Length: 232
Image (tube, rainbow, N blue to C red):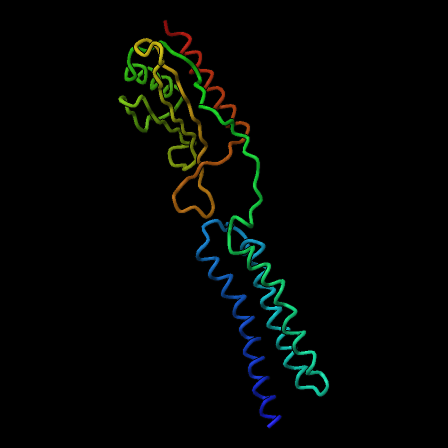
């Protein structure tokens, strides 16, 4: 009778050991499929990786406990081996349930204020002013991608070469002066550097510009300011 009870206990402990090991694998797989914030490289957030490792350690500890239980005089150590991994795994599981919990917040240097215009220009009509700005951009090698006269907006692109996916892009829009809307407009300019990016399936993405690309942006903005100042 005693031998039968011991065998049943060993079967239960062995099942628990496999449960720990499988749990570590399942956590990583489920997180990899469900989290949109996982990094492009690596195996996942530190908490999830650690959780899987601790789960596997728990399984190994349980297997060790089973082995010890088969040795005379060591059955009393079974409970200690089984409970040892539970506490750290529970703590890590709570931290790993939220992707945001794995990320350290960074300071946002963006000023909390309205976007300031690049320049003020004498303008009686958005469409007329946009046509003038189109000429300035095409003279500098840009191709006009879209123009919306009603919204006072245009986009332009300049590829590094005709067959290259790398490009400079410009979004330019006008905002009518609230005091003299029929006479003046504010020019807003947004510059972006776009290149193919590893892991992206949506084509070129915006990237941080290199110093030479920043200088091109600065040169373009200076040209727009000079153009605005030249208008009567």
